[in-house]
View 1: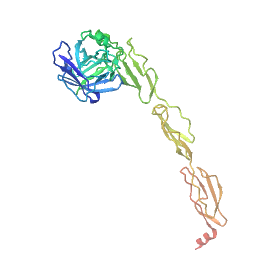
View 2 (view 1 turned 180 degrees about the horizontal axis):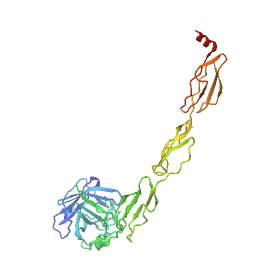
View 3 (view 1 turned 120 degrees about the vertical axis):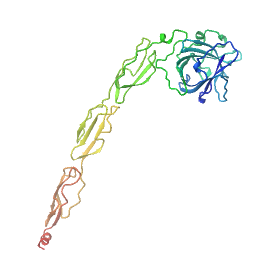
View 4 (view 1 turned 90 degrees about the horizontal axis):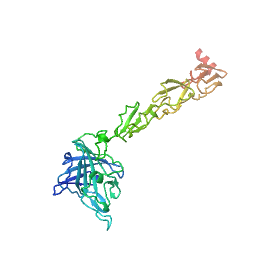
Length: 395
């Protein structure tokens, strides 16, 4: 039984993994749950670190597509693979090695070369697998991917040891997942890579203890609790880091790097006194505390804010209130009267009239004062001729 894999352009969102029934000595066994099912394939492209979501399908027949785009190795399209070897590590872990059907050359005298894909699968449930490509990124193929690409003068035999020959890497690969379409199983937080041919992962992985919750902080990202896994915190709104580390990593000694982050409430600076105002209410100077002013009698707000709140950026909302003295309108001249004295037109300023000779006050007020509401007290004085007033009374 041959197993073949065909990669299709990720932009088409479909990848096909093929199994061909032919006469061969290859003895390769894929996990049975993977066959004849459609899977959602998620991974990070190693050449540009961009996330990719495609569909992966294992089938029993050859499928071709005119839109297929695959590896290009020095002008040769590599689009079909045969499984030549596999290694069962446990009832949930296995390594599968694929060899390209097409060979390629890098020049007239370079000889034939092949590409190899070494995949380490871990079954989480029947609906979910994760796997790694156990090779370093090869920059000579397009697109750059984790492919084993031996030089032409040292092509290994297909029967060479799987792990020590084909599945070698110096930079740790990233996890890739296969999620059966329509299911919701999730990869456990302690999922980790271990060397395929050594002891099981449970004996190799360094694990750090679970960390207790941090007051006034949330976890924004956590990759797990194993070696090199990280946890990242963020202080909640209105709080800031005063000590410790917002990002911590599980180290080889099973301790987390850094120290517990301490988030404390944001405090705004004390505000200076404001001229011509009184503070009517204040809850404090911490985040979301408020201060409320009122202009004193005879003054009114001309700009700024009478209520201000301490914000998360440690600044007060709004701006400093400005209270200015109330001003009354200029009064029109009064017939048959003169102004004896006037102190101005602002709050509590006064104006005093006197009727001219031969006239006397019949209504209104000879003294008026500018009040806090911007109006003059009393009423406009009315001065009438004395004789005219006397004749009217005789009648």
